[in-house]
Length: 304
Image (cartoon, rainbow, N blue to C red; front, side, top):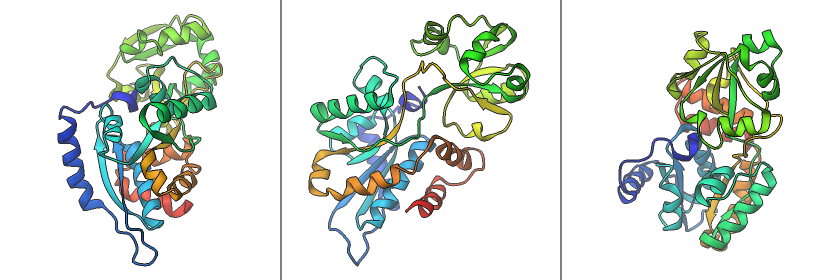
C-alpha cells in the first residue's frame, strides 16, 4: 500500500538517517527560554506528503510544550521502523494497518480498535515502543469512481459498484488484480467483479485517466488529495473488506518514561485529525503547491 512501501530508499539506513539529521538540524526548533525543557526530541517522518505534515504538527506541538525538536524527515517507509528501534529517532507517525501487516506480519483485521489493541500490545512486547492514541484519520485502501458515473448508476457503496461492474471500465494498477488485499479480497467479500473492461495504468495517472473519461473506477487511498475534487467520489466500503490504517504516534518507551507529558501533547493533536481534514491538507500540498511546513503550521494554529 502507498504509505507502507512506496519510494523505497536506495540508500542505506545510515546514509538516509545521516542526511535526514543534517536536514533536521536546519529545521529544528528551540525550546522556549521560559519553561523550556533540557531535552531534545527527535521526530521522524516517512517520505511522503501526509506523513511529513503530521510529523511537523507533532513537532510544533512538542516545541510549544517546551521541547527542542530535531526533525529527521523523508525517511524511506521500509527504513523508518528500524530507525526507531535502533535509537536513531524517538517517534514518528505510523498507521495501524502498517504495524499489523507490514511490521508484525499478522493477518488483516477490519475492526479499528482490535487492530490498535493488537499493535499496541505487540510493539510494547517486541520493540519497547508505545502506540499513543490513534486518530480518526484512516489512510487505507479504497475505490474511487467518476462522480458523473456514480450519479448515472446510483452508486454510493462498493456493493452498488459490484452490481454495476459489467457496465463499468476498471483502471487497475496491475498488482491490485493479484495481491491479497486487492481484487481477491473484494471478490471474496462482495462477489465477482465482471468489469466491462479492465486496463492497467500507472498509479500516478489514475486521476487523469478518470478525468479524461478513459475509465470509470480505480483503486485509491482514502486520503489522497485529489479526492477533494468534485469530479471524483470515494466509495463506501460497506462490508469492510479492508483493514484500517489509522494514524497514531509511535514513541520509544524510554522517551515516554523520562517525559510522560509527551503522551498528552501528542494525543491532543492526534485527536484533531480526521480522514477529511488530512485529505484536505494533502491537497494543499500536492495540488495547490504549498509547502508542507506552512500547511502544518496553519493547521496547528487552529487546533492548539
